[in-house]
Each structure stands twice: as C-alpha cells, then as structure tokens.
Image 1 (tube, rainbow, N blue to C red):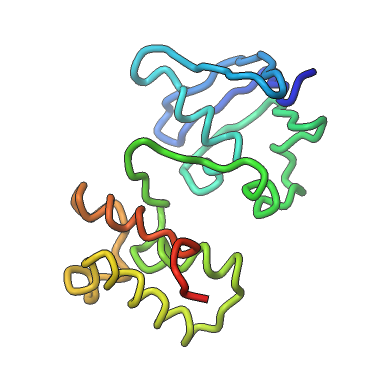
Image 2 (cartoon, rainbow, N blue to C red):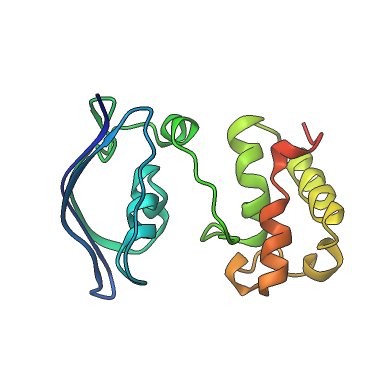
Length: 167
C-alpha cells in the first residue's frame, strides 16, 4: 500500500534554480525508502516539501501533487501545523528555520503551548541559557538564525523546547 504518492512535482526557487522537475514516484507504507543522488540533486528540497518547510523559503513555483494517505499536502487549505505533527523532520546537521534566533526557539512553544508573550520571553531566555547561548545572542535575538556560527546553530537546534520543562 502506498503511503505517499508523488505526481509531477516541480519546484523552482526565486533565483531561477529548478530544484525538482517532474518528479513522480510512490513510497510504500511501513517500508524503508532511500533517496540518493549527487549534491544539489534536490533530495533535501523534496524532504522539505513533505512537511511544507519550503513554505518558509523563497519559492517562485511549486506544482504537482504529493498525496499523503490520499490527501494532497500541497493544497493551500491544508493545516500545516497538523501536517507537521504527522510528518516530522530530523536533520543530521543543524538546520535553523529561516526565522530570527528568538522565533527558532519560540516557534514550537507558540504552536504547542500557546504561551503568552511574557511567558515566551522567559522560556526563550531559559532555553538559550541551558545551552550556553544566551550571553552570546541576547542582544541579537531579532537577527536571522542563519547568522549564527555552526556551533551556535547546533546549540540552537538542540534546544528543542519540548525537551525541557518550559511549559
């Protein structure tokens, strides 16, 4: 039985790079599926499509279908938060969201805990302190997370809010 059906998937970034072109294949339920290919071949882009992480990127064109349990996850009416609860991402290297340092920490809390702003500020400070990052970034919380060094990005990514007692 197919869990995921990909039909004529195309994705082009605003800089003109066509990362995915007419991709079609099926992923079986309860099976191991491997994506392999050369660097720049679109593997990571495809994985980001599966839980709509590309919604946060500068994509100029996205077409085709990606059916997950028979539902087209590219439909604009899909609740992306619910989708991400079903299709998660685990990266081998840290990949901050294309958001600010602050929002990278607060994002999960805002989705899961629905905390008030004052509570979020405290939770973000506590989380960044726990990974010895607070003193390095407390004056740059509105800077893009991509501006951090590799080691800082690792610590930021490790500080997943649901790993701690921040609620």
